[in-house]
Picture 1 (tube, rainbow, N blue to C red):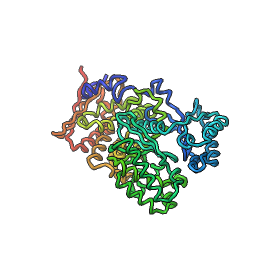
Picture 2 (picture 1 turned 90 degrees about the vertical axis):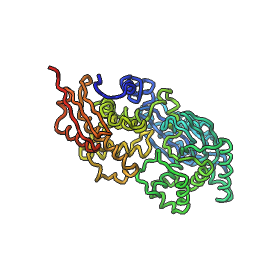
Picture 3 (picture 1 turned 45 degrees about the vertical axis):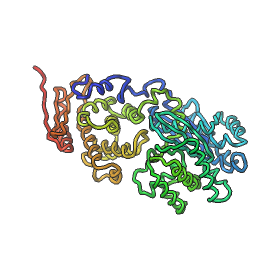
Picture 4 (picture 1 turned 90 degrees about the horizontal axis):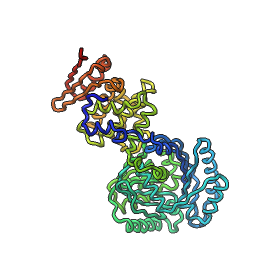
Length: 525
């Protein structure tokens, strides 16, 4: 029973129906989704070999294990036609290690794919046979269009229903793919990988002319692409790190970091004029990666000038996440990755799993008129409101903020991370001043900060009203024009409304600048 929630009938039905709505039964409880609970994939690229083991909520998985080894398999490929001999040794050693790790983790098998270097090299098949013989791992070689498709699907893992152009840069190639309405459209591949660009004769002038010509061919194939540009790949992420450093940007989370055409241009010039060793040390970029960054910056500048996207977003999700997405049933793909991750966190870590949706129903009247993107964050906050209870009380508020802003959560813009973090901070604290995160608050405006505070204080009060599932719950009513907050206390709720609860309710009313009215409904004799 859910008495007096004040929710609209349609949304109440979504909460009550097991398989519907954002509060429906989490799909990680479904057998087909549990089969994806721990999946290991290996990406044998032209520059690096990486193992990722996914775990947790299948729709928004945690990275149970993530290791990358820079092998430069594609170095010198254009001249020799073969894989880099030293890179082959390093790659084989990495794959042997990854296979042993997988066995130790109890993984049934690893899915291994190889991209441009192995597919283009004369000795690519020989290398695959050597790997199979030495490790038992079978490498699946994918062509450029398939690489583009999988990378685009990785973006869809984090941005369901998104649209735009996905650009994945590797060591020896660069792929482009259209996405729209949650589906992958046209795909093209090119040789604009930094390892191949290193081998172009004629210096910087010849290289830039080559990049310009190839980019124009790509545009002729795809046509205008004025929507969002999603950037996938280690070189793009390195450039984003440098852009953050140049701007003194306070939140060092690469996923969903946004850049503009102007900032790309400024950062490309910044890289061109910088001492690369000093820049590498300041930004925490490996020497192998940093050697490719200036070339990648030239490609990115031309890419942006050619396609002129409306905005640019960094995606930490790519081909490996696309391989996981490939295995998902459509009903799992259609779910919101943020809500699924929060449901999983609540089930795993909260003291009373399932209370999050009741808390949302209780505080909903305060936020009845907020738009759906904001309502989604409110639902996420309610699911996460109790998952950090094990932290020391003196640091619990900061732990909540830190977890929300830096956790591996898909489907969150940086501004939304800050909003969610502030709401959870206020779940445990009336004040946000004096923390080590104050430089991050400015990423959202003052009205949003205030809304996050109200949400946090509403959860702070509502979290004191634990009761059995069949208890009659009280109700909140909010009259914004009259600036009145009404609380109706049921007989089951009255014993829970002690001094601390009263103080928390008063703090919420103060943040709303509201006059408070409390009505106690006594049990019938």
